[in-house]
Image (cartoon, rainbow, N blue to C red; front, side, top):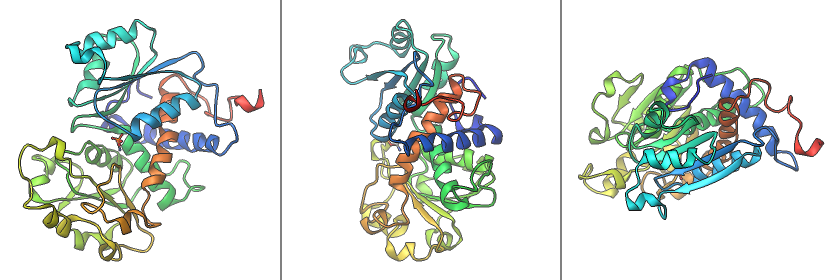
Length: 326
Ligand code: CP
């Protein structure tokens, strides 16, 4: 296992399957009356968020607390970052407090890599989303959700997504989720198709291990999972499509379109969703949509990543006494 988690592209198939299998063990803890393990007792994890987040920030905190770590939450808003303090000085201030791991979300692509490789700090670095670059734990929780839904929870251990057809739809240009998913799903043997308006397809996509289509309707019947992406208006500095209505008409998922998917196929979304834009309320609230499941699975994945990067080398749950059994 690597020392830091910066990019989904750094994960080998064995690394990824180990994380998915460990997350299955962690998920069993969630079914217990006391959902806690003593695994990270005495270790300190700081959640360093320079960009807004609901799901990632809360689920990392839940994961850290379920593993009994001491947790420090840092948000750039309301901190000395607003007075001009740099990433280096912020990180070293936290390091001085004896931090073992830093979970970082940053608007600049490459900030977690810089933190991990600069020598500024000794702590383990976990990327919780950097600019338009990577969001590796999102890709892992998405793969975990797909494996449970498409391969089966019991058959899941040691399995990957070989041969599964995954379609990712929408604002690929600004999406770290799309980049991370393409990397990880390729490593796990899945076939990925990106569907987007030509203006929202990144330059250089021809080198990515996936297909590109501009036609959602012809792709849906061949998909085992369809992942809808939010249009990231906050990262746009130009008009990428004529109107929201036109975007939804061509690239939005409604009930009529969902009916074109195979019966077993699922609809996914990393959140936050913009209902009425890329996905209708009918689809978002249907039993085929895994958005809430993805959030729950995010806690198990983040527990697994923290456990493995902070030194776990045995079966995560079976070798560890739970708080319950002490
Ligand atoms: N999927 C995701 O990263 O959501 P948040 O921005 O709410 O963390």
